[in-house]
Length: 198
Ligand code: ADP
Image 1 (spheres, helix red, strand yellow):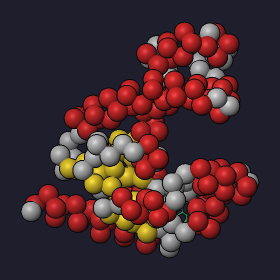
Image 2 (image 1 turned 90 degrees about the horizontal axis):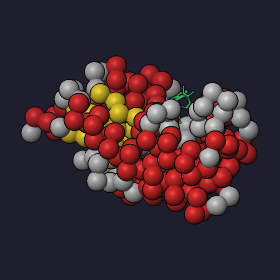
Image 3 (image 1 turned 180 degrees about the horizontal axis):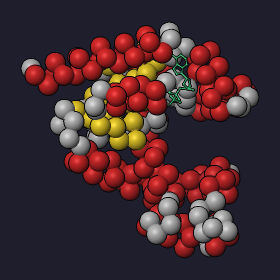
């Protein structure tokens, strides 16, 4: 099974690219979705977080209060490390399960922070969606109805375009319209199918 890690900065177009690959019948394993579901009630990470922080970390419905948790790890690197050490192996495990269950010719693992976290051992290739920063900003502010300031701050805390390019084996440029992006995905799809043949 050929495994492609899909990454890119905020608003670069990762989710859109992933949905186009999905339209072509390619299995998508999304690490963000996995991470979100990991803290669902009755999941091991939910239990561990409540054991550490007590019931005050829960909403009235018994779910992890994500805003509260983000605030804790934002202000304390030890807490951040503790949470990452808890979550990251569990995410990896679920990704491996997703890959093992995949039935398409190849599969795509969406890992937004692939370069930042350095998880290069899960996939065979790294596909970067690259976009000019101005477009990342305009698309994200529109999508999330948020300020430019906020998006620029996130971009500053992510890997740079150059850092991503340095590890990319494949690149899809997203500086045109949706049709051009779809075309770029199709071309890349053909390249992957060709790789599988040879
Ligand atoms: P990411 O997953 O990398 O954060 P998204 O795929 O969600 O990025 O794209 C960010 C926003 O920009 C979305 O609202 C998406 O519909 C829009 N978008 C992505 N690519 C294009 C494009 N080529 N033209 C116009 N809008 C786009």
